[in-house]
Length: 272
Image (cartoon, rainbow, N blue to C red; front, side, top):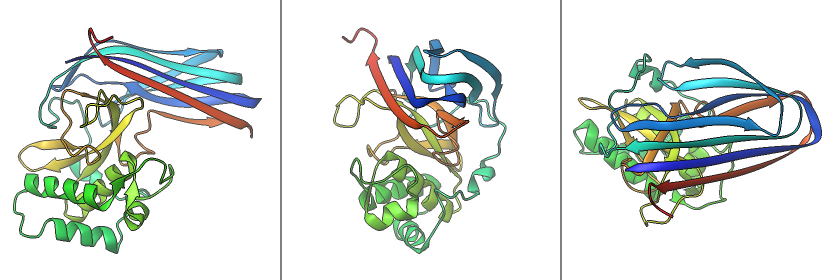
């Protein structure tokens, strides 16, 4: 499938800030599941300097951008990616970090008694890693119902499980946590989704988890949509949690009232 992406992130500051520094993880990487045909990331509405760019240990491209005297800044992403359905299996990604590095806990995915109990119950009598991963994803989807606006960016996996509601970020964090409880490395993935399981178009970026499965390697699981990522998905990058994998991370030099507007449009080639 050939998917065309338009992703605009706009910041407004009142009063303007003296400086804004951002780390951008906005470039999809070629691997067996996707090929990038065209891609551009530009900064508008503010003077800026592009800093260092590097490919991190997970195979993702990262660049820094510095801006001065910022009242408004816009980051615009445009591109086309050809995707292939590999049933969630990630092959051919250039990465140097061993899977065991993703057994480390993070503040967002820290285990508690509830998460450990969920993992144990989901995997009772299940023998293979792949079956365990599917059972864990299904259990997370049942335990944390998708409900927009019920959690915040800082909500942890344990907190989302306790209230029984959350969004894709919370479900991904919980899946990483319960996977780790069963000795399976897990990581948080950000990207784009052309449509959900119901066929409705998504107007925002999306998140899911990848678990390390013996014999297969990294396999993606989207608990929010009850599936493994297929050719509707574009993979941008990964990390231990949503903070580490954030497409845009930044810091400002002074206190200011900030407004953030995000618009994402994904369409198949030829679609109006």
